[in-house]
Amino acid sequence: MNVDDRLVEHEGPPRYCATHTNVETGLSCGRCGRLICPRCLVQTPVGGRCRACARVRRSPVFDVSGRQYALAAGASVLVGGVTGVGWAVLLAAIGWIFFLPWLLAAGVGYLVGEAVSASVNRKRGTGLAVIAALGVLVAYAVVVGVTLGRSGLGFYTPFNIVFALMFLAVAVYIAVNRVR
Ligand SMILES: [Zn+2]
Ligand SMILES: [Zn+2]
Image (cartoon, rainbow, N blue to C red; front, side, top):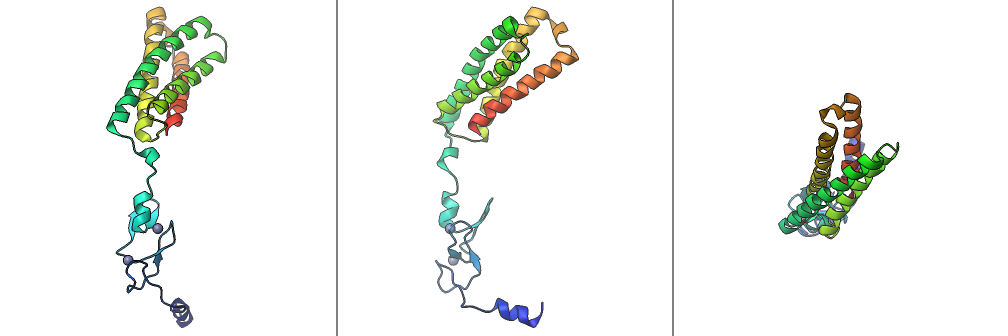
């Protein structure tokens, strides 16, 4: 650093913390721009914030109560079970239509994700995404159970397993994205 750089750094009027008006500072809140000193600075996952902004950074959409998690889990398992039966029946009846298994997987994912989302008034979050994924797994377990009952283990050739896992992935992806 040469002398000129240091001169530039010290140019301009000194700036003071908006709360502690006697403390000189070069920091400001990354959200509202208010000048803050190290005492006021709150480190958040998205950078330095003033105290007020640090408090409001979480949207209420992500505040899910224990009761809402229970509701979401109930809706997820229930709708997962019901759509699983529909999934298995339709797969057995018309699953040979080449695009239909993809549509069925997407439909199950959508219905389970919607059920979870509606049960918690459209709240979002990782916990709800996990719950929605579990509902899809319930539906999938029904399909696997019915398939094993109809065709036995012989159905699960490596080829069929790959497709079955892809359908599962599609369903989970769509369900999770309704609530994440
Ligand atoms: Zn702020
Ligand atoms: Zn301060």
